[in-house]
Length: 294
Image (tube, rainbow, N blue to C red; front, side):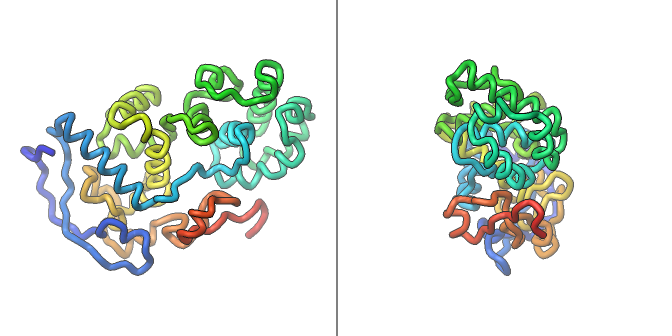
């Protein structure tokens, strides 16, 4: 990484890699922010891939945070996640899928009854129209099965490239980059790209990594954005990849104060899934509460 024009800042103590995982960890080292203003393409690729490797160590159990048992449940849940949290969707879909377990069931449902179930997710009328519409399309065009191809998925009502890649990567094992709001924010903060259009971000970031890394990369970045690198006040002082971040210092740099900003399992709180993978539970993560609990 070139440092010809590196901006000199007063060194600040930040956690060693991995200390954010452990409550009470005190290991720190002194680093300075390293703005890659003159970073070469090769240096950018190396830095981006190193960040992904570091995040893979921090979040070895990263996974999609929507509860699902099959591709149909995942595509519906992903559509419902627009303008709300995965947690709220996870608290709502058990009732939806208990009553309408298949595309055929949801396609033939009474819209008013579906709306009532989906009300907690917000924009429930539009979402009802989308999930019933995609269910009808699945029944009429795909024999009630969710297609495993991008060009077919994006034809379904309410399904764009982001939703399609969530389904492809997590239900079919086909690599894809999920450019949600967290992903967009962090890759720009890390100066991996200056693009603001999701499709252009997808293309530029995809070019930095092997295709086989795309799905896990998406999980790593999104998890880091939800738990540590927040939009309004990043927990810089508790961030294990601070030495690699050109935006270090935009958030709270005091280690103790930064620890208080950590969310989900790193802050001692449950994640977003009611039924998370066993690897997450084994690592100390906690399942989210059902709707109406607490």
